[in-house]
Amino acid sequence: MDAASSRPAVVIDNGTGCTKMGFAGNVEPSFILPTVVAVNDSFVNQTRASSTKGSNWSAQHSAGVMADLDFYIGEEALSRSKSSSTYNLSYPIKHGQVDNWDAMERFWQQCIYNYLRCDPEDHYFLLTESPLTAPESREYTGEILFETFNVPGLYIAVQPVLALAAGYTTSKCEMTGVVVDVGDGATHVVPVADGYVIGSSIKSIPVAGKDVTRFIQQLMRERGEHVPPEESLEVARKVKEMYCYTCSDIVKEFNKHDKEPAKFIKQWRGTKPKTGAPYSCDIGYERFLGPEVFFNPEIYSSDFTIPLPEVIDKCIQSAPIDTRRALYKNVVLSGGSTMFKDFNRRLQRDLKKIVDARFQLSDARIRGEVKAQPVEVNVVSHPIQRYAVWFGGSVLASTPDFFKVFKD
Image (cartoon, rainbow, N blue to C red; front, side, top):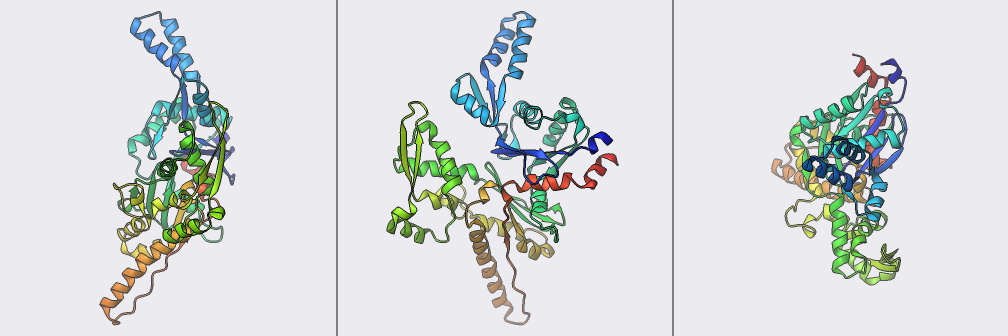
């Protein structure tokens, strides 16, 4: 126990799109890689065929061992699946929840041994989970970490609480606020009061980073841009990350692009993976229409039409009345899909409009008998919000209190 507490804890934040991992005490994660596993299907099929035919045990066993060993994760997995048809991709996490536990175990194995290069028996582990995770999922995680990797201690933290902890400055720790966590596969709006999640007020919406990517892909396809079909999703993702921004008014933005196309329309250049021939395409309206799905979701889907600022407002209004002012005052952004330019300003403006309209309505009803104080709305944006959850975990796991939990 003492040997493990003298070494830094391992912090792993598994997300739907990317996994951030590193050691406690660091400002940035050591590795950020896609949460994907590529398994060699030829060995898996061989194992199945051996068991159905009833062939000798040793052949079946060796095929099973090779199936367990021959797999890749992250960028390496993506490149293997492109270069060889025998490797099939598996995404262990869908919409913030672990969907494939075998793939998840393989993923953790590579993270610990190949990337972090540490002995799991010598380090405490801090893992993160989505706010709506079922208790059974936590049990499976503990079972794998303790029984397969033999870790001395495991702490599973809720992602929004860590994100809130990452957002404070050293002089002022404010653990009451609303965390707007927009990842690749899930968007959660989670109110936290004094470090405790208000579970009944959590809101989850079916629009996240992956939907922005698909919308950009759809816009480019409809316009007839000559992007190779097998590259279209990857090009859309890169366009989202490199060129997209949040606008204050869609109509004005359309007019700007139409008046000065040379200034606003960008060029994307690439090479076709199969032939190596160069190609180019224009990036126009999708630069601002991509992030707009959070503020006007009806442009992307007719199934969900409630804008993100309205969801945040409903979340706070459903929280206990004595916490609401503090929650409006500290709306913290977390996740890679909140990194669009001016996203925080647009969110603050739209949320303030909703709050001010309600305030004026209630003020008019009271007719001046009691003068209510205006509600302050503040959306907090900071440079590390892309990996705020991991950084919050790093801060927590580097405190002396973290190790006391395992000793008590």
